[in-house]
Image (cartoon, rainbow, N blue to C red; front, side):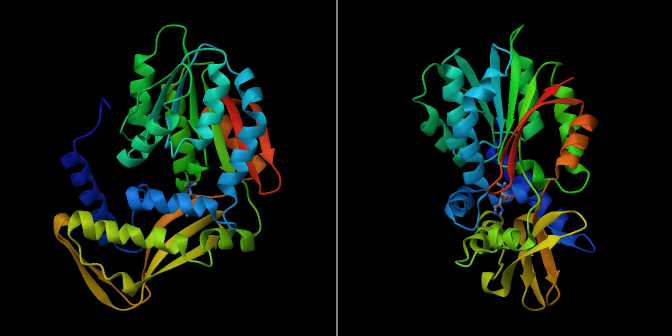
Length: 322
Ligand code: AVJ
């Protein structure tokens, strides 16, 4: 894989972000992207199989039904970049549909090296596909892809799974604008968005009864222990999922059972926790149709088409850069 950061640079970055999030006054937080080391990625796969977490299956249904139709709406030739590629099960449906028309460059952009490795193995067999991955932050990787494209080639950016929902507040909208700046008019974005639904359904999806999501969340502390030499006692933290009505986001938190201090040597800090204090580890924003209209407009995109799975409440949106 070309263009990756060195392991030492990644470790330094992780330590910096952990220390910034845990020593700041007020709500402690950790970036949700760090949930996906090899253990976290494996646990996320299990989450996707849980009956309570319908999101991934909904998008798979959409792509199974409509991949051909989606591909038909794209300008060709097209180069495909994917932000946060996951295992490639959904991507395969699109790449197979595309490869009937053209040989395709596919550039997964993903900070988890284990996820990239899985993906390469998973998609290798598709006809006339060339895979070149980038172990980079999303927009850094996308800039590299955009810089390498040939004249006359259009870009299709896949941002599936409602990962956009992990940006909280204005960050999602800012991110889409940043992404648009890298694109040229006529390039396209296929954006997966989980739609607003009942609070009961949402909480069950993020606080499942057998505790897989709890393990996924707690693994972040275990990862900090493994990689930064910290001494988090995982028995002393519990998983919580709440729906924030104001921001329309499910939030995952880790709550400290007691007053405690945790040393994180590689980040050069000792973090203090009050009893019941939480670390906010993830937001998963849920969308309304009106909000999508506003986001596209603000971002500089024309809404070309939308495919909706009504049984769960999930949309794949095809937007074209204006
Ligand atoms: C992969 C970011 C879409 O927010 O629903 C699943 C991650 N977190 N359960 C989501 C997740 C808890 C997931 N995304």
